[in-house]
Image (tube, rainbow, N blue to C red; front, side):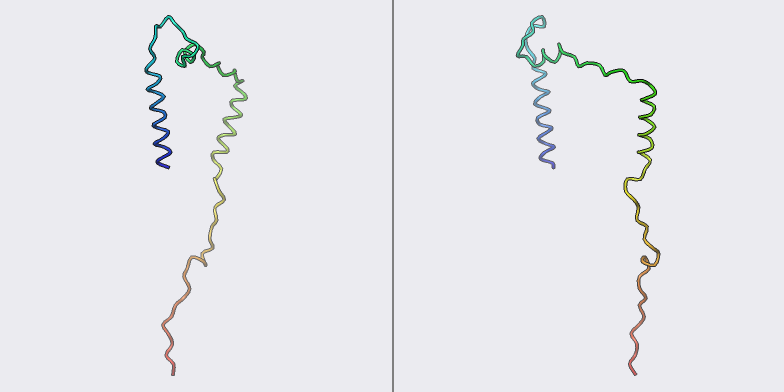
Length: 92
């Protein structure tokens, strides 16, 4: 797991390094330059959501968050007490 996380961190650092080495004139935009493509094409805004739908979503999310994640098993008290142990009987 550590190797996968280290690999992800290395790839992220490599991408940040590649994004920071953007070198050409500001007025020029190239079709093959990734930084120019990202800066000129902003993602679209999220569609407007009616407040009533948002309130219903938040209420359902709140109720689902309050539910227990798994049914709890409650052991009977008789299983929690160890069996009786008496000293060995003396054979007569």
